[in-house]
Image 1: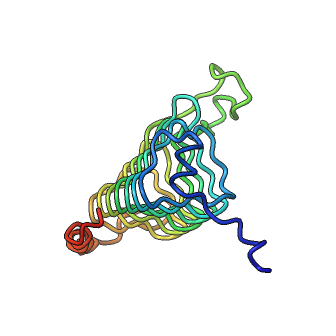
Image 2: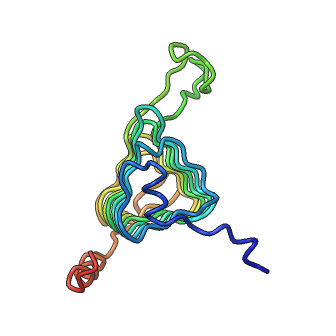
Length: 196
């Protein structure tokens, strides 16, 4: 009886038939996600995208998700200017990634219903590097690269690109210390077992 409350996941075969640019093996996307521009989205192997996530890559946008990636529920990726998530990266619940943002200074008008020449939308591709992880409720702004091994603490606002293998926290996020590189060694076990 409880199954009626579980919408379940689409698998890679169903996703390929839906019109994604490409879909790897062992991919699960929750059926209650909102996805716009799926023809501009590619997904690698061993990926899970949990419920109530929003993925938008319409028009000129793109979303490239590598392998061994997890996107937690209630996250949102607005990829109008492009977003790439490299292998072994992940987003915890409620993370928001923006590749475009309105100008809030008051010098221009805002929102997508206003003609573009009256706005000053800031846009730039976002890259979530290999082994980068983003904590719950954090926000990543346009033109930011979370370089390899970056860890972002929960409720952080990332407005600038990060150093490799570093931990960031706060609003705006600041580096608080270096991060161990053990995931690079552990990753080799996946390759040695023939799982990649």
